[in-house]
Length: 427
Image (cartoon, one colour):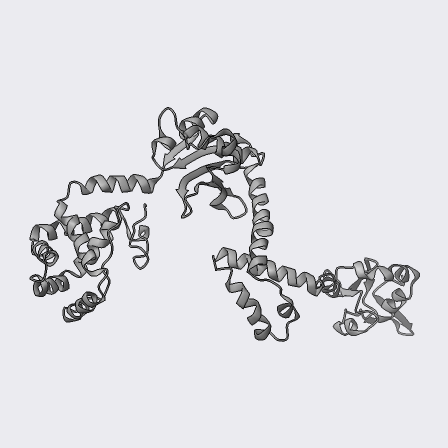
């Protein structure tokens, strides 16, 4: 009978007698607790009667004697010094050791700088925050070693975070199609600038995003002083936009869209920035700003309404805006009529869509305003004018029409927070 057989036979006078099957040892978890074996011995997931040496990558029978003989073999001892390269749980944690305290401090400073920039927090706050952190976390060496005041914070945002984000944006624009949106503005120092924003599909985020590209100073003293060119023509604006992309080696063939406000310099048919983009990038899509277009439509639509309707909104706001006494008196009438105590909104001169929120607020406070000016109408001419207009049912009917029209055209999700400005944004 073969020695590898699982059964053994014995012979007696009565003939051969079948004996018990040979016992096969299963792997036991207690072996993993032995100090000499725990670093390289593991269970074989395919068989309960075998185990694996992770150092030699060999399969062993689940026998403590066989495991001991393998640990004393020359092959195992030769490969044992390379144990640190084995991907065990202990080695994974050892390989991910924390860096030095100085590196951790630098990482923390970068994260704090990014937080301040993302949430648009004043840089002066950092002068006080770095003094609070060591007191709030006395057991942290990193918090006590942070050296980040507002001057360094600005340098980190401009030269590290901003530069890194700019490089990532340049790499993205070299590979994807994108649209350009521009707008001019003059700041409080009378410096005329042009902001350029790019819009493209980000495959990492899985959605279309808008990113700031450049803030171009139109009248650069160093360049304009030599040529004497202090104009803001369409040709100059177009050249400045194209130059900002060529300086970063962005392929102009990737430009597929252009958007701006509706002025002739930007959107004229023949000699404008958009006409030059049509020549440079055939097939480009040019779209005017929807907000400006809607404001112009609303402005023309308001011309069909009686002038007294808009006049009433401005008279009411101007009567209360600078007088805390009048506002306090109005609150008494609001409480008497069980009306919400809300301030009256200001009708903007250029944002015509804000008139809708102004009308809604006046209609909400109509009863309180009627009672207030019934009591005050003899004081001055403004009170008399407001009292007459509030008593006119035709004006109230026009206000109802504006309310219903605004609710139908501009749904609730397209409205700016009334607590901030009361403006409506385009759908």
